[in-house]
Image 1 (cartoon, rainbow, N blue to C red):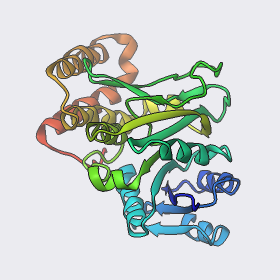
Image 2: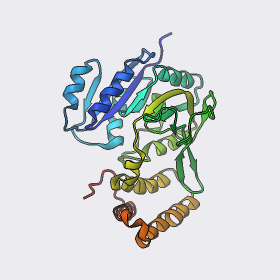
Image 3: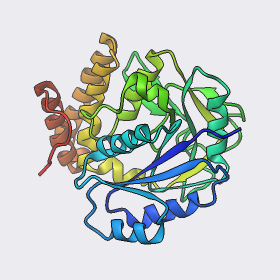
Image 4: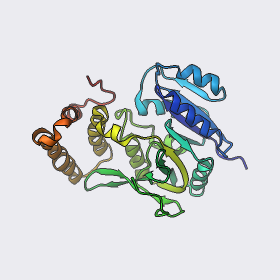
Length: 304
């Protein structure tokens, strides 16, 4: 029996070193029916020429500009649709994978027609036994998504069997292409952050299961501190959480908690407490993000 065809979509934006390491790890996959698609999001380094020379079998799509996580991955998804792939795997370029992870994900998805999305166990690259994501959960009373298992040391606490989750991080997300045809592509209003959470909520509303597969493993070269202190990241995380609440049809409790008990309290603390003086840049972009949401400003924003 011919295994399902998987389009592995890797987004690159001036990340040549990480992308090459990711591609090298994919060479060791034990799953034969896959096509690796690198979407270059307008890189200004030597990414395109180097990847093309080092990996001639890789399909390379050049967008010509930075379309963000959403636009770049949508370009890859449209390619997967055009080639009649059975699955698409969205995979961050700063990951390295276990050789058996893709087969495990596909097997789980194939075993149940109601499964729409599956995701692996993701560890920190620099701490290989510390979990970054064991799937995601959403507290709908607070409108708050979070990573399950974040910063926990692997001790078998999530078992060996697939388990339902509310969302799978876009760092490594396998989706059935018929599900994409039904629910649509990633929402380009987000540009980056929260887009996969909203996508998973859309898939769940359509009646599909979202599963975490603990036995499928990869390692993510993420720097939590850098992300937490970046004003750009803080802008998109603030604005896009509100976009997520609207798109996911969250109730009034989620809006009240987010705007009053989180956003307002944070802004007051960052404005008045001396210990938070170093967070003034984050405070300013947070205010801008809230204003932009209510003004209907979506997609990519240039922060000066």
